[in-house]
Amino acid sequence: MNRDHTKIIQIGNKVIGGGNPVLIQSMCNTKTQDVASTVNQINALTAAGCDIIRVAVPDMEAAAAIKEIKKQISIPLVADIHFDYRLAVASIESGADKIRINPGNIGSLDRVKAVVDKAKEYQIPIRVGVNSGSLEKNLIEKYGGVTAEGIVESALNKVRMIEEMDYGNLVISIKSSDVLMCIKAHELIAERTDYPLHVGITEAGTLISGTIKSSVGLGIILHKGIGDTIRVSLTGDPLEEIKAAKTILRTLGLKRGGVEVISCPTCGRTRIDLISLANQVEDMVSAYDHLDIKVAVMGCVVNGPGEAREADIGIAGGIGEGLLIKKGEVIRKVPEEELLSALQEELMKMQ
Image (cartoon, rainbow, N blue to C red; front, side, top):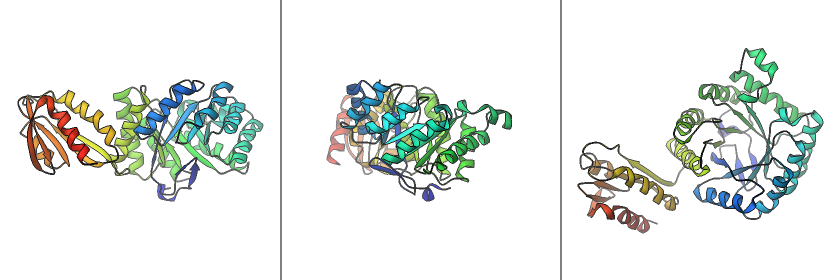
C-alpha cells in the first residue's frame, strides 16, 4: 500500500497517512518523571524539527508526569508502554496523544482489551509495535528463525486481535536491526494492510554506523512509497536523530524547506580549516531552517567557485581566505577568520 493510500490517523494536532507529509519522530532519553528535563528536551527537539515525541513510561510516576509535560509542549506525545497494561491506561488518562504497545508482552486478552477500551474512550491511536527481537517462539519455529515473514505475521495477528475488539485507530511498526530483513518486511506488510506505517531500523547503533544503516534502510523503504512516519534510532543525543531524519527526507524529496549544506572532501589543495568550518556552518544554519536554500562550503579554488555557484550562497577557500559567492556571483574576498560571520550576515539578509 503506497503511503498516498494509507488510512489517515490523527495524533494530537498532527496527521499521518493518506499522502500527508512523512513526519519525524524521536524519543526522549530523560527520566519522564523529571518533568523539567523532559520538557526542555522535547522543546529543543521541536525546534530542531521533531514532529512527534515519545517518552518511556516504566512506572506510575512517569505516567502521571505526562499530564504536566503536555501543558508545556506543542507536539503530540506518545507513551511507550511495556508489560504493564495499567501504565497504558494511566498514560491515556494523563493525556497521551497515542500509546505504543506490543500486545504480546502486555499479557492476557483481558488486559489488552482494557487498554483498547481506554484508547477507544479517549479516541487516541495505538501503535502496534513488533520488533524482530520479540518475535514469538511459534513463529520462529514456523519460519525456521527470525524472518521478515514472521515479523509481518506477528504484527498482523496483533492488529487482527485489536480489530476484533472493534478498534481500528492503529499505526503499525515492524522493526529489525537487520536492514535487509526490515526492508523485506515492509514490502510484505505494505501489500497486506492500509494502516499507516511507522518505519525505523531498530537499535541501529552509534552516530555514524546508525545513521548509515538508517539512511540505507529508510531510504529504500521510503523510496518505494512505503512509510508514513519515521524515527532514526541512534545511541546518542536525540537531536542527531532529527538531523539525520531531515536529511534523509530532503534527499528523497519528501521534505521541502530548510537549509541544505554541501561541502567538499578535503585534499592537499585545501588551505583553510575546512573541516571545522563546515561543521560550524552546519550548526549555524540550524537557526535558518525556515529558509529553503542550499549553502556550499568549498575548500579550494579548483572546484569551489563552480560548485558554490550552483548553491544559493557559498564560500570557497583560498590561502587563509575565501570567496563569498551568492547566486553564482562572487560578492567579495574575506579573511578565513571572518568567513563564518560573513556567511551568517548574508543569511540574515535572506530571511
